[in-house]
Amino acid sequence: MNSEVKVALKAAENFKYHEHTNGLKYFRHDYFAPEVDPEFSPQSYLIKQLPMVVNPLHFHEQNQFQVFIEGRGSFGKHLIEPYVVHYAGAYTGYGPIVAGEEGVHYLTLRSSRDPGAKFLPAQMEQFKKGPKHHYTSPSMKALDQTDLNALKELDFRWEHIDQDSGLGVGELKLPPHQSYDIRIPNQAAGIFIVVMQGCLVANEQKMFKNENLYIAKKIQTYSIQTDEQAAQILVLQMPLKNLVYC
Image (cartoon, rainbow, N blue to C red; front, side, top):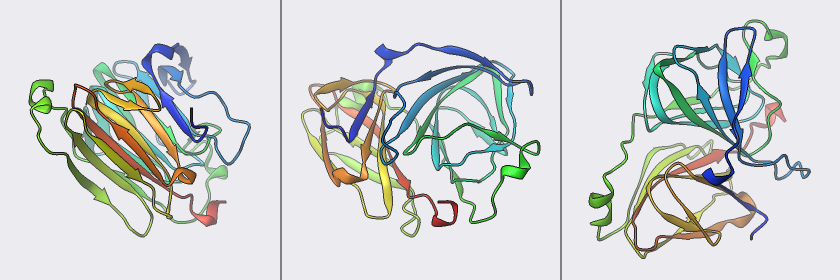
């Protein structure tokens, strides 16, 4: 198995309950174990935020994606549902995330390990001045599997792409028994792949709905493929951390 590629599978899930003094309550499972190598320390974890609970305004020290995969709620001024993608750059404040009556579940994805949320205004002394960057996508609906399997040609589009920063949010529809090469540009730290529907074969493993994969920048080009089932996939291109914060 390639040491620069990590796969997050549901079979490994072991959720732990967390409760903060600010009222935030959630279950969390980390798919990737902490890395000793600071040059390769990606994070992929799933948060199950409890119904009607608020995750207050906060920031992180690393760039990150959040992929909302289940439930409903609001994110600042945006309504959230599957599959809304949010990107926040390092030291960019965002939120609150307000869970609806069913709660809200979301993946958090980072190329580098983060020490934890810094809530505002309580931890304002740790906030750093510099460029701020965030993006929230429209909802990208998962297709019915029958319709997806009927695809004859692959279809890839960028929902959002920023050539200057390296940020990219794309959607790939890959018919049965086809392959696709993921290419990582110089301005990106790496790419996360999230299965929205169907089955994807990567790193000699089958990946299903909401399972995900991280490909480090060193790989440059990485091939994924489908078997008898087609796959609908999110392609999330992670920018390099701004040098101001390094």
